[in-house]
Amino acid sequence: MVVIDFDMNQPRVDVFRLHRSNRIDSYLAEHNGKPVNGRIGWANFCKRLSGHFPRVASATAE
Image (cartoon, rainbow, N blue to C red; front, side):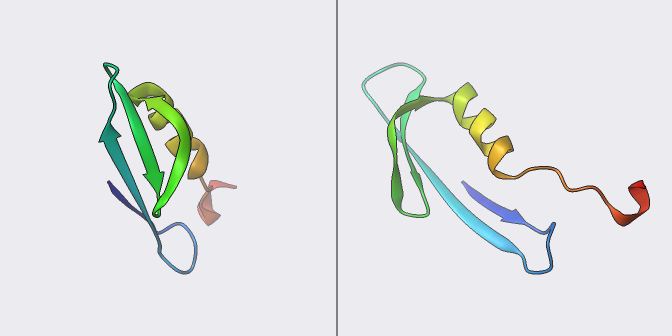
């Protein structure tokens, strides 16, 4: 999965790879080529992903 973040001045590209593990709905994950500790389920992966890319308020939101 490739995520491109355009919220800041420079676009930021992050690459996540999920590899099948021996458990159902659990994956061995890599973030930009570095392994993430242990197995991770899909729901936890999505939760971490949303924490990794926090929402940024626009200038007109004030």
